[in-house]
Length: 342
Image (cartoon, rainbow, N blue to C red; front, side, top):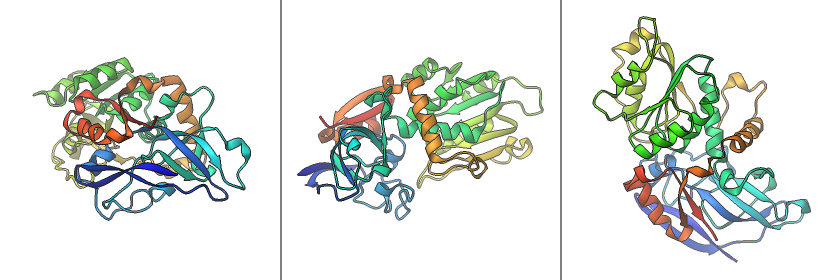
């Protein structure tokens, strides 16, 4: 039996290869993929050759061991069905719909411990957002929004949108988002943002500050998220954040450098820069929280938010080149791109 697997071969080079697929060994199952979600953040860094060569991909995920060197299989949001089981695997796994943190390919083998069965109340289309929903929950946990706070979010790609959907459930004084693309700003308002601005507008920082109230010497947002993936946005994020405010940096810039103005408001405003990345939990949470508990919350939030309406494009795996070209050249036209395997 063969499978189709997506490979990044070099900057802006994607190939879908047919390769042999071995049957599951004892303790493993075989999964047939139904949908996989393309990450327009990390995957575009890889596609453009901007990921740091030699750095480990993700040592916490068995399917993503190795480094960011070409050729590379990548992806981390797959939904499929178990079609075969090896010995030593409970028969109840056969036929289950499952989610996996796994690269884009039509079939794969894994141990049951690497798979998460879909709850009965979650559709395949909503389940494919599980990894990004976990990331959004991680951002909210690390930012710790409080009642009555003013929050800004830079970047309304899919992770930014899911973060806004979660933040909108808090009793915030204001929730302001910024993104270059009108489609994303419109979607952001639909998910609960009070206002959504263009960060490329001539006075975007001033416009954002005008929507924020405060009596302290350096008024601004209490909490700001930088989720755009654009290094210049971090300078803007600091500029709109108020005294003793927190800036949660969820973007991964890869090899892109950041030029910051730290000689103005930042120096006197006691602003906190917080690095947030989903592979781990902040140490202060590990007494009561685990990855399993965070995934449980992510399933609950998927049921509540139902983000499948954010799927803007579907491409067969054989047309993956077109999918990445769309995200690279026309990002304003897409929100969530998925690959199909039917």
